[in-house]
Image (cartoon, rainbow, N blue to C red; front, side):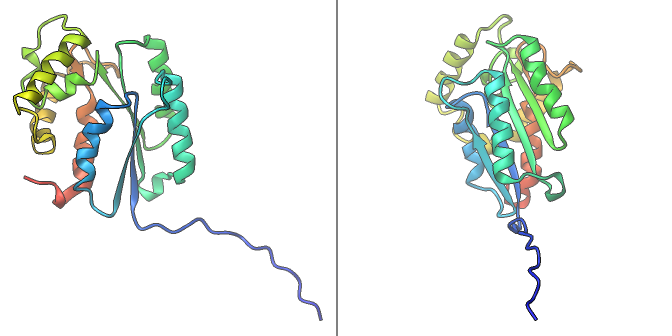
Length: 204
């Protein structure tokens, strides 16, 4: 008797680690920063900083990139996967950023953190109290000052100084809105979670 064909169901590939995906608006500074953590990650966590396509850093493109990488990696909350989107405020209107915030609120384990006006605010927290930043500082001036910090060797170990940066950024983040006040940042929420994931491998 001829055997009946049984429907074959292809199982999703097994993986023994979770993904920690970071989708960045910037194509250089943010990627360089988060790659510091890739050097010490545990096998159970796969840190994947992802920059948007060149010349496509608008919030829409960042969100499209997040959706694409989520589908490619088969991200699932039950696998303890997390995806974080990181942007600035310097070039985008609140309604554009709201589009990303709404998408993250509707997708489990998606998160959105913003620096105002630029990512360098978070980098400054590794070196000094954010209260010390000059009121009305532009992204250009923040980047120029921070570049001098690097020349002076004050930003040589960002992984080791991350806990202090978290403390400094949290202390002055008094806004309940997803967009922080000027010269403030929400990136500490991301890095705090990243440190938890890295666990015992994190240098002290």
